[in-house]
Image 1 (cartoon, rainbow, N blue to C red):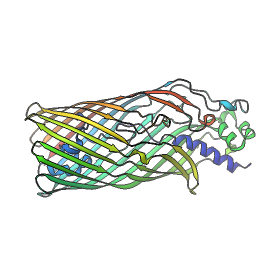
Image 2 (cartoon, rainbow, N blue to C red):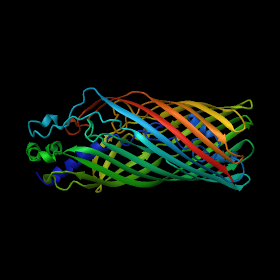
Image 3 (tube, helix red, strand yellow):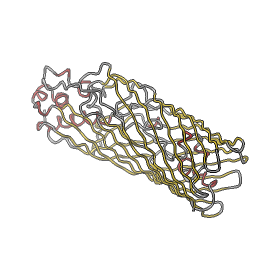
Image 4 (cartoon, rainbow, N blue to C red):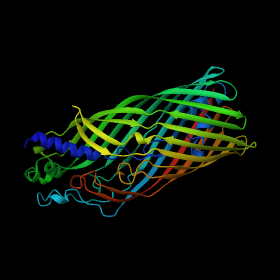
Length: 451
């Protein structure tokens, strides 16, 4: 039984565990980020596809540029996102427990509960919109549509399935809007997106050697090399597009509809192993993952009530069902692993209000409910996602006739998430059994200026 077979099996087991669950928890459903402006945060992004309050409408509905004042407008913002994600154990099992008779080093210590897997992250955005003709506007948006991070203690219970998960994206979105008449406007744009990912987990080399070549190979793994780590890094770039329309039947009522396309990535990179025993040979290998990010569609309403109140509402559908599994391939095209995800499509509903307190100050508030695409059976430690409810509050201060400052805050109540996951092999990856309690706090600031 050759070293090549041992090597391939060890790599397959390690990489299967590291990719189980995909990427980190974020703040729209799954790993999408809706925090694309602070002006919308105070309303929990309710009615974002109809609001057209500033140049950030480029992301939510490019047709909204038609409702911006004449001239050039620049909007820059930053969201500070603090996640608390803590695991409680209720019967987890250690990796390698079944192989104690083969090699005493095989049963790895169970470990702790991982600490707070969340932390503080920042999400920037920048938008510019200006006139081409009286009825046509051009815009450019820079945003982060997917991402964020989870990071557990390196010796925690679930380390063989996940330690660190970090994903970042950059979306460059040139757009155009056309005002057909006083009641109807259209808009659209293209998106160039880049993605970078890093995923790490622990490896039980004794269990990997046993799976590849049996008891003899497992017994030959030195105790000092029984456990190590594997790090996956990868990146890609791809194209997408977005469309929108706004209908304003009266000065008090506006309806917006928007659609953002899916984006297909072929993420390519490498798997790098540490502390691998010599008998397994060189385990480092090129890997790739073909993944299609979800599309989304929104219907939104903005309704003025009197001179001081604006009511906002929306419903947003996201096509998460495109992600049914994560299939990892070697560079020669052979399948390294396939992890079931079985995501389902989701809906997000929001209602908000803005009260103009004075010529300078406006108060914003909102509530939203966001469903998760993750099912209880396939939930993993990389994405312990559950349904969440938003409560938001914000304010806008008009610094001058051309400049505004927005501040927003939201607290997200996340439903408790159960987990019972062994990534298909308790001997190799252990069993994570318990539940997650999570909460999210978001603070956003944004400055907008018109030239």
